[in-house]
Image (cartoon, rainbow, N blue to C red; front, side):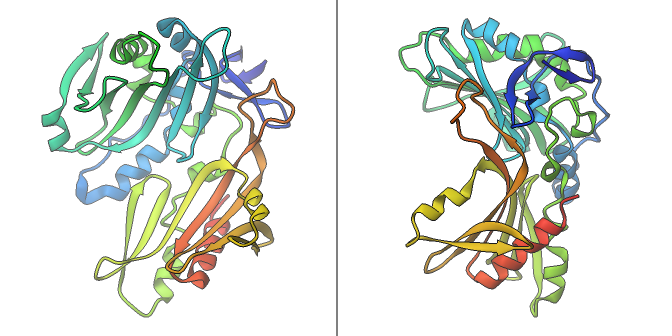
Length: 326
């Protein structure tokens, strides 16, 4: 058991050595009001609004199991912090049959609306996004402002399963969609453990670096937790991102490809290719563990990652991103 804002509930997997739990709950937790995402010219404000939303709080393990006829096995954020993945298995199996993913902060343009089909599910409006290639996945988007949305994607992992992914997605949204109208934010602390890196503006970490470069640069974002420093001509100089992923230090078992590195007192990994340099530094606490039934199950970590063709710049980006974590 664990405590949420609504008292003791069981809504997911127990996570981390401290046995707190990542809760994807459908309890009546009224989320802090999120400002509508802005227009394309205000892209940074739109991603800031999306960064405040807790995607795992938009899940319900109980409802996902009920509509699919399966058992909720694990719920985990990442690798991008604006996503939360819920995996469903058969009662007698351990391989995922369905994966249900919430992503807070997908671009949703006028062209996307023209391609999609507006659907009212219960009392909430969503956009069904047709897939041209496969019948094994289905996606719905709840729009927030002119160019941004929150997406639900349902993927059938087991081809032998006869379930319809769009039916599962629709029935799931019928159960949880009301919580998508005014989504719970990270400040509401519905999901635990609280992940400090999830609140950080990645571009704020690059402001100081940009000011010290001897060339005009721009900042660009591809998701709420990633920021790229670009030259005036559009070439990428440095990307900084906050993620959740397995401990990158295990890569040091391949010493020909990876090198141990220390940045701001934290141990990490450097991979250097002919045209790129990639630095990954994990935050040791809190860790997340999806499978609590195995003592040897791997943990996932909050990770600061930087990529650049210049290794010194990648290291500086990592140091700045670490310094920005509260």
